Length: 619
Image: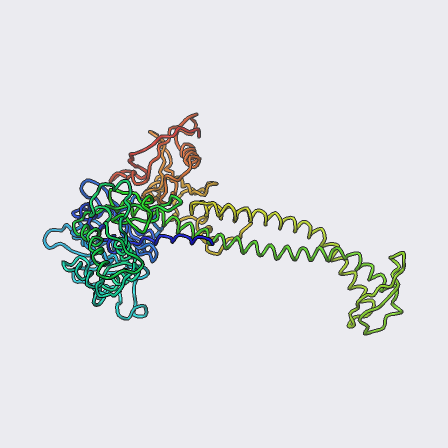
């Protein structure tokens, strides 16, 4: 008999305990800091740039239904071309404001960031609320009177009758679960023990269920962890935690069978409760980053976990860092799954369509093989017109094409005359004859396309990034193996059309790599280029210490991804449109647009810049 497969460890959530630790770390680092930047890369994601304690931080708030979370991050995602309305509202209300407080609402997955203006007198205070509750997640801005200014997801009466979230309405916090206790209350442990003692018998599953029923903010994962700790006699510790105390590592208890007495389990639960909630109350955390068997980060938690193998847990200095690592990988995997899943479906549908066409070609080939038979039938009908009577469905004649002169039965269309039946046979002959060569060529093309698509299927399964999947899709579209969707065609046409240059003399080129290069041809065009057209992370070029056109490379927020070949092409164009165009070697400076400014009162086309790098090119 085969041994049963080991249970797969549960998914590690962003639960109320995780948020509590995140809030504790954010309070130490961000309170008193100034919000200097606000971005909204996606409809459900905010990035707050905060300057605090002489350092710059990037705070991520996500209301994504699958990846709702809040933590510091090192990843800057590109902005959409036009900021969403909610982002513009936040820029008006909180950019330049100081963070006054960061708190968790009760022991719930609700984060509140209170900010205040630096104006003299009574400061303006608003609160940015992140509700991180799965599909009900939301990001809401509330004024000092508790009125909703706006939300990332506007919740109307049709969506939720009890809790509308619309501008101008009072903010209603998520309802508190009735009859559940706060696990950080002074009597919380006693309530937990009483709840367990009330059971005649208890197993890990029933213990976890009872904890869920008794306490607010208790996720199924956390309840399962407490139950597993209470069940374990001697819980092994990771090597990095050897020698640490119970509050910092794992508890020890007296063991629990599949079903044990409630009184005995209650005593073992005491140590488990102290190891988690007691340590959390003292902020004695020991965060870990958790890896799967493939070496991929899959989650992070404030304490080492018994539900995961000890060797798969890596202690980290702070939970924000671990969460950023785990969720960045999870988001990349989710993005890859979305892009690859869509491409996988397109390839499968195209393969199915080509297989249908191959069957049609095979039928055409079979028909072509009968071309001579159709020709002979026509000639035999003409040779035996006198034997065919109107309305007959077939005629049997002597086949003089065969030396043995056997009989041949030829089907007829009773609606046609004998001469018309003969002509119909000749038409089928010509069609079969002419289609034979075309079917052979078409069949070869179909086989080649099927082979390449099947190869692309294999390549797709080996890809590790969404960008690689997009590149593969672009390659298949460009080679004609896949059809471009209406959305993709619209985006491509918009890119080819380019932005509105408002009549300025600006040349626009698109490189083979797909990057846009703009070249100003007049002083006013150069002004428009750097003041209106360029984004902060676009690359700006100018010939060093000489008059030249301003040249811009559109980077879409990813200047580090611009290939060297594109930089060199733009530098050559810049040198070619300069006073040094006849020189054999020209020094061209390039930097990000955010490091370029036009001095106040300067003539059109004038600019100061810094953080530049120099390329030497031949015009």
